[in-house]
Amino acid sequence: MERKIDYSIARRRMVQEQLAARDITDRRILEAFMEVPRHLFLDEAIGARAYDDCSFPIGYSQTISQPYIQALMLQYLSINPQDRVLEIGTGSGYLTAILSLLSKEVFSVERMGALSRNAEEVLSRISTGRIRLKTGDGSNGWEFYAPFDRIIVSAAMAEGPDMLLAQLKDEGMMIAPVVSDNEHLILFRKRAGAVASERLSRCAFVPLLKGVE
Image 1 (cartoon, rainbow, N blue to C red):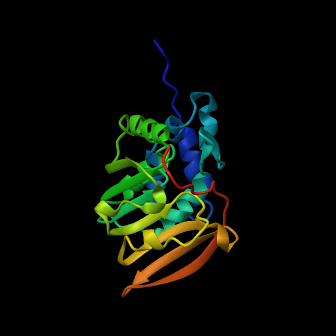
Image 2 (image 1 turned 120 degrees about the vertical axis):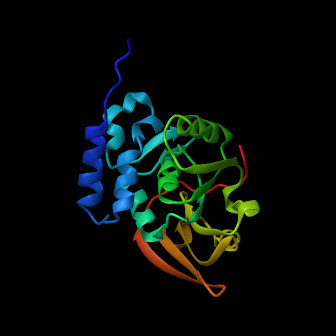
């Protein structure tokens, strides 16, 4: 009989030492990171290192971001339980799972069909909230289900996110790494139809590419 490895201690250490001990104070975010098994979204050979504060390759020249930067983006977004969230860049599906525990529903777009299918398979094996997945060009968003309360982009945008901002509700927020701003995280807020932006932390993400594969 195959022995099932318990990674709960590694996961708890990740939450305590990499998130709570730094500046992640949102209790709901900390609980979500404690609940989602990050190791399932990575190669089995990585083992407990899946809970290290670093990125890992997930194939197709894509990566899973470090836990801290993901938690930081979520904290800036201030997601409410009733929010509908658009995620650009499903990737491994790890952040998708966490988003689903924080919101009412997640709509996640991934341009790589193989990654989207892999994410769907892992997500089907764990407990999550409501998730809709789509293979498509993330730069176009998901207009059919717009508008969204929150939008999170997990790849560096080379140009203005006008199409995504058009799918953001009034009083909504969007966070994205933007290359043209020396690759900083930018927080966008929409109020009365106008959009204000705030430069946040420096970051490093794979580029957001157009098209579908």
